[in-house]
Amino acid sequence: MASDLNLPESLYEDYSTPDLPVHGPASVAYWIQALQSHETKERALLILSQNKEIRKDLAPLLWNSIGTISALLQEIISVYRTLSSPNLTETASTRVSNALALFQCVASHPETRKQFLKAKLPLYLYPFLNTKDKEKPHEYLRLTSLGVIGTLVKSDNPEAIRFLLQTEIFPCCLTSMEVGSDLSKQVATFIIYKILLHEEGLKYCCVLADRFFAVARALAQMTEKLVEQPSPRLLKHIICCYHRLSQSPRACDGLRCCLPLWFGDRKFTSQLHVRSSKTPISSS
Image (cartoon, rainbow, N blue to C red; front, side):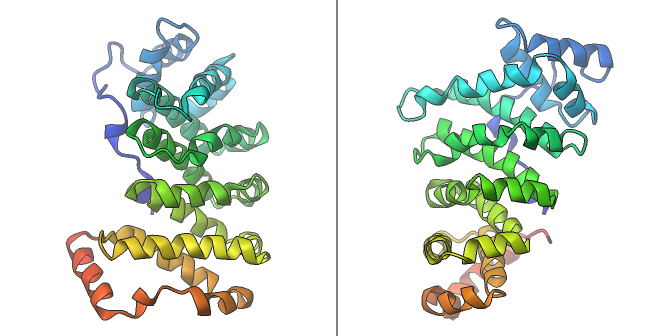
């Protein structure tokens, strides 16, 4: 399932040959320090985000260096005022996406994940998930933000699941399932599924009828669109969500009246089966 959350490299500018190597501790420290300067911040964001897999201790270094998380947060907040207007540029979106990629690095590391949640940093991503603009700059931010949340749920950490439930992540994911690209829909549906796997998450979804039907409606609408635009990976996540919901007696009553009729249509399932055979789906 890890491959389902790997964001495409096209989200970021190609920066495979930076001016300085990032392997040594001195160069890493240099680029982290460069985040503090307006003149070097954009380049530092690119280098560190593109090479974040090279140094396994990058997350602790980012978290424990003075002013670094604040600098990343300032970068993220800087585009809030343009989210509801057509003024968000791809350049600004790319910069923030790179800052979010470093947030994802911090969220994925076992030594920094707890502090990341304790500081309530995921809340700063929610504005990007609640926007309904479908333009490319907004989609970059939506997808990268979902990548951070997806990293948190992949850890199967009850504390992370509890935090996301308490901060109303469900409506954010439902918005992404409605207006996002196919990849955003995949990650948002995967997040819903991983939360549902926890008893607390399943109970949260099913305790209120309005909440359950909001999720069921989003799943059904995505299924309808798959008739014209098949997406085996997205279908897999949708079916996983339905399967998990069916394990709740309360949800079963609702599913009887809102399960997509297309699931019983042989032409629909065979069409997706043909596409699936051409595009292998990685196992969970």
